[in-house]
Amino acid sequence: MTETVLLTGVTGFIAKRIALDLLNAGYAVRGSLRSIKRADEVRDAVRPHIKDPVSLDHLSFVELDLTHDGGWDEAMIGISAVLHTASPFPMTQPKSDEDLIRPAVDGALRALRAARNAGVTRIILTSSMAAVMNKELAQGATVNEADWTDVNHPTATAYDKSKTLAEKAAWDFVADHPEMRLTTVNPGLVAGIPLDVKYGTSLGLIERFFLGSDPAVPDFGLPLVDVIDVSAMHLEALKRPETAGKRYCASAGFIAAPEIARILKEAYPNRKIATRVAPKWLLRILALMDPSVRSVLPTLGRLLEVDASRATTEMEIDFIPVRDSILASASYIASVKQA
Ligand code: NDP
Image (tube, rainbow, N blue to C red; front, side):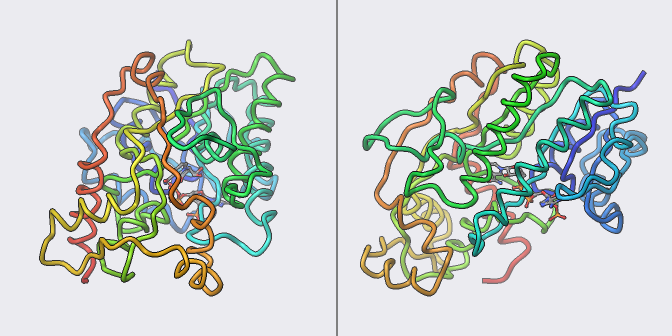
């Protein structure tokens, strides 16, 4: 019998890829979205890549909101596992941290409670490196699954707090209900080729550099990983019961933003791509007006390393190199947007 999994936030950049991979792997997918009106958008995104057209019949939809109870219990009927990806991921930080924290934390707990009520004990949660690496660290330090973001640290944004507190709430829930088997996947910035133009915040940074939106590049760094690998990790977690109880960092490498710009400029020398590093004083002034600049200020000049070897050894993930993912994103953006 075909196994059915609930995939929350199926309209998302990452979840659309997970839906595709699940269908191609023979699972039935019940995708949650906020409005059923977007079901065709998801079908259209996955259809061109489906190996067997019949498997598209195994994609169904259910309306769920992270901030409302309605529908969660019904959504769990006949489900063998939940892949909970839904969480707000806006381009800029909100006025109040709670605008992100509440949907992230309450949504994760709604998913876990409803699953438990229905006897669904297997949960894969899409957390983030944002829940791992924003803490007091020496320059060049290596982080791994043992690290947790300090939500009171100056580098912790509202988004970082939302991901950290949601993941913590999930682990606390599981500690109180030991029958629940939780795995978290903690990706860095996810790049690569999206399935459609609704690629959300994730490719926003590469797009901004690629389209020459700024005269210079802020000197912050981040771990980067391809959406193909992130999706593969969700499926590996599902297939491997021994991954329960563990976090898995998803990163092909830590890269500085100016290096991303250089990779783009080298591949597209005729495009207006800025590679000059923006001076800190200028960023401080810009930050007064632009919240997206404000959110990178605390991490300027910080270089870290991520040890994602747990994913390599326990899930057999052979991470796509960061350069390839960046150029894959750029090539997609070039095909859909004018400079
Ligand atoms: P998207 O913004 O593309 O997807 C987010 C999904 O969450 C969408 O389906 C969105 O629905 C849904 N969502 C947001 N708020 C609510 C709500 N109140 N109720 C129901 N659904 C909601 O982002 P990504 O695909 O990039 O991210 C998916 C997950 O991966 C998130 O948990 C994110 O934190 C995590 N992540 C992403 C990274 C990245 O670089 N992309 C890095 C690390 C972690 P709608 O379409 O209706 O807005």
